[in-house]
Length: 147
Image (cartoon, rainbow, N blue to C red; front, side, top):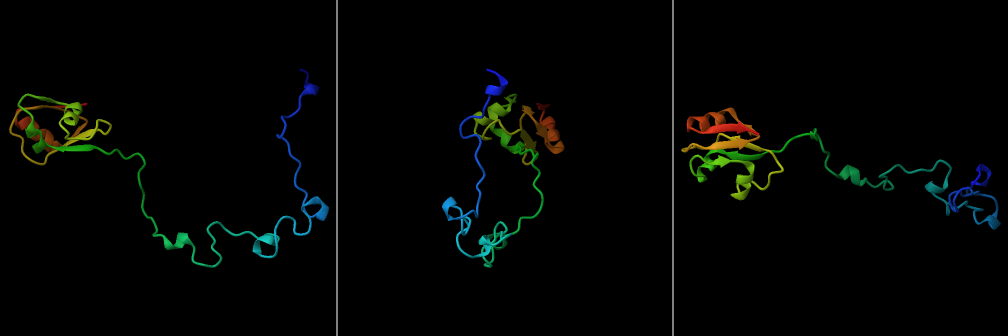
């Protein structure tokens, strides 16, 4: 194949529509704009959402305010008091919590909060601990490990 033999694929190039060039062209008289009205006039455009003078839908909806952080991390939370369901000296990981139906899945990181009392020594492995939760687990003779 040579450079002078190249040509575009069929349908890749189209002639522009020549409007207003007589009725025989199929685009004469009203030039494909129908009859009168705002959209038939020169420069006759309607802004997006315009409803012909009726109060537009966008004005009827409540205004959303504020800011939503797209990088926010949602934690699965567990209270220290909930950990009393395990026997003493048990190693608690997110997988163990899912197996006991205390959290839904391991996709979200796990955070341990200090609500409740712990009466046994446990080895707790989680992504985050509050300072009070860490203190309660260690006071009960347990260990805290951040994943």
